Length: 252
Ligand SMILES: Nc1ncnc2c1ncn2[C@@H]1O[C@H](COP(=O)(O)OP(=O)(O)OP(=O)(O)O)[C@@H](O)[C@H]1O
Image (cartoon, rainbow, N blue to C red; front, side, top):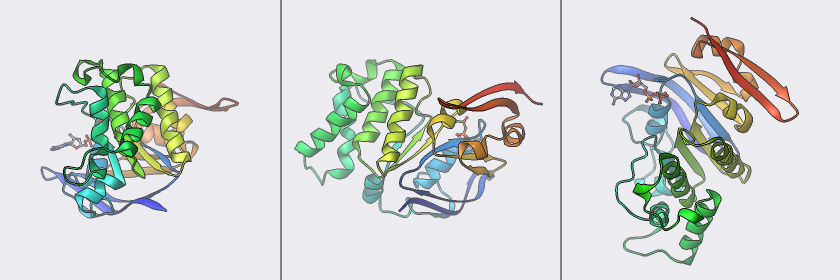
């Protein structure tokens, strides 16, 4: 089943064309890594798809009423802004908001989803800590847990593993891969192409104002694409432990 469909999506910001004619479908079971150089339009694409930015063309998510959108997709923005000094548990519980009607409080099922999200991200020891007093990486993990607690078919995350230590980066990529394996879908913008190659089922490379490549990691991380869009050379090997990718030199 298709969870996100973009048809000829274009975004202009301050009269500048940022993205032109993006058409893609994301289906359940996919863990999509959205990759591309700084300024390529990864954040812009996700925000437009969510209906958070004016755009031309069609996004199936943006077309939904706000409440339905909140039940269809969870969003972890790049800015790790936690506005209030609430506990981690309360922050994660905010992910249940789209499922609560009016002034209705959380029920046992909602609390169970919060517990699961905290456990999935290894946050039980931090459960009663004040979220604004956590480290940057801990705050990122709490915001991922909030997105997980939303229990949506699609999770969209903007650089979710930036600032996490290696173990937390790998664990978070495994959480996303598992969600996809369970029949949901994840779209995450990523700068770590090595982790993207190892964990994503599909990479969408943005460059030159649109989709420069779309396919499996091996199909997308070709020497030609890396030179043309990222201006780097790289080593890519398939090993018994999975693909290993290492950028090597800048190509000018
Ligand atoms: N509000 C805005 N007004 C004008 N231009 C903007 C605005 N927001 C972003 N841009 C421009 O749009 C382009 C794409 O930005 P975007 O944040 O989508 O890139 P990105 O691929 O997510 O980059 P990064 O990897 O650095 O996070 C950039 O050139 C940026 O300067």
